[in-house]
Figure: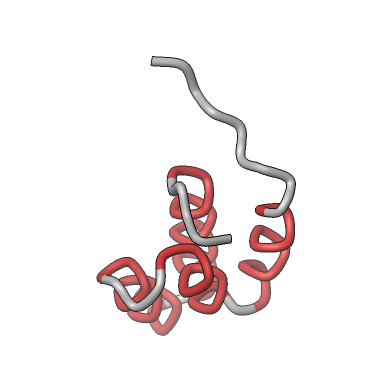
Amino acid sequence: MADKVSPTSDVILYFLAIFIPPLSVFFKRGLKADFWINILLWILGWIPGVLHAWYIISRSEGAM
């Protein structure tokens, strides 16, 4: 299985994830479990929220 590179439009989401991780996850996945998990991680700490958001953006085929 070959690794896919995220589309150029995801660069905006990576940048947004630095400041507001749940918003970037929302744009990528909607109001699914990943969004709520990211909110909890963001409340626990900024870095876990950012790392989770980057993971979701890099692994998801999403709306954006």
